[in-house]
Image 1 (cartoon, helix red, strand yellow):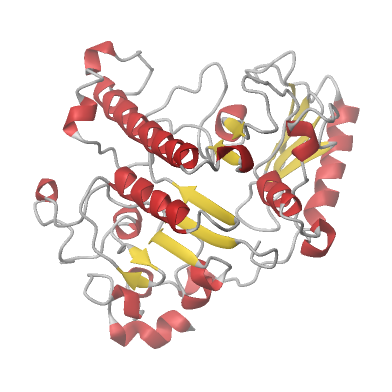
Image 2: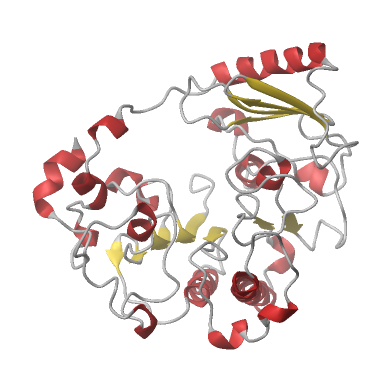
Length: 378
């Protein structure tokens, strides 16, 4: 996008590495405001509700606490923030749009909400009393109440971003994509009638909302039935900006003609996922038309999603030839994946080098520990 003359901005969650060469600033973002971990507490760590719990580290934290207490950064430098996180990220997204209104821009807003931990402003939670929440097996009504408030806050934030585009008269020429990265979490969400949730490859874990706003080209209320993938966002964005998809080597497809109704053909013949924890782990999904193959470490399941969207009728035994053909195709696609860039990390990991590092942007936080620098960098 930068090669096509776009200024590139990012706001929010990164979760793709904390080493200097893995920062968004080193990977194509000219302006990035957010956090590098898998999540973040929704208020600054000195907020009264935390009772000082996260200001000092008296013992090693668990993985989730460690991820969610990283500092907020703007272009690699720590910054202070003072409000509910979703509102903070929205404000910075608006700042970026206003700053770059007169030039082509690409903005990635990766909200933390409604990721755990469950936190929201009291006045928003009050809009969703626990006793009014839909009953979901295994999910406390109080959790549903807070979760609803978190989604409400995110919805308000997205509305403010859309209002900014309208106010600056940028809406007609701006493509807005909205999606989730996975299905709802079991502890908070109701994915019914779909089977499964975040962390597995059933439709409740894979299928997510995917909405596009492009007033000049897409009629509001249009519903498209053929499945697409988040990988298509990068490919379509680059194509619309005038880039060369073949040269870029992206795995997604340009779906602009499908979105705008110029084409009614399915953008993909098949969709492929690898869900295993290692390249050798034969676990993943192949979607071919209405059929979905799910392989989990040697166990094969086959479903017809048109007839059986709840994935309750396994067809692997009654249609073994289709299952075998799809597994062979999955393996062929899997063999074309890039090899891993590193390995053996678990065997070398200790509590200290997992918890600490000597990065400059960690100074002043419980995560900074200079004596572990050499071990962390190896």
